Amino acid sequence: MKYDDKKLYAFLRGAASVAELPQTLLALPYAREQHQNQCRASGEPYILHPLMLACHICALSDKKDKEYLDILLASALLHDVCEDCGRTVSELPVNSAVKTVICLLTFEVMPGESKESAKIRYYNAISEGRPATTVKLVDRCNNVSTMAGPFTTERMNKYISETHRFIMPLLEKAMVKYPQDSNQFFMLKYHLTSLLDLAERCLNDETATTNTK
Picture 1 (spheres, rainbow, N blue to C red):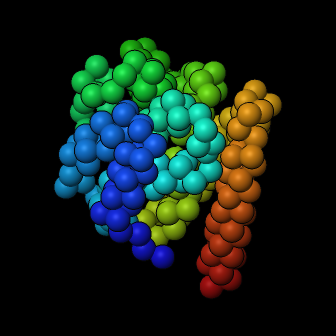
Picture 2: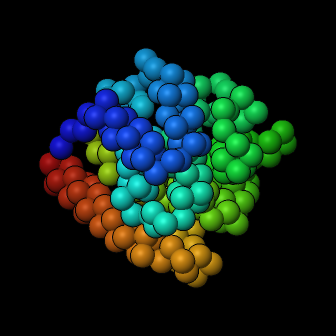
């Protein structure tokens, strides 16, 4: 099923306007501008990815806590801008609460640090932030759901392994640490485990077929 980025954008802008979510309204046009002319491995406009994350969060989150929802949506929309568009956190047109989340979500290998150590530090830091945890989990859920086709078999295996090693423990920790989000995390766990199981079965079938030729 294909999604239309223009329709998703219009939906989020309308929802954010009605709910009076100022950071989301600032993040929407900025994200679209920064990701302009970028495409995902599938060939789809890159902006579709953050828009899908924001729609996912919008569908699952508590609408009563508008301030927190605003932080979540703005962070989802901007989560890749610093890594992929060459922008610094200080340049983002949002408040300090959203910038703090983006700092946690932006992966960086420090001088003298191995990539392995950087990943451990990165996921440990994310786990200490409620909104960063939610955005990262939804981000991985979307990425796993779209990896078939664009990813090579080797890349899929690596991505699945990383998901088991870092994302699933992050999710389990979040379910205990942030019980107010338990319903959302349950749905994310269901989606992720289902997607991972399907992907692993397909890869195993592919390997078995190759070995019998």
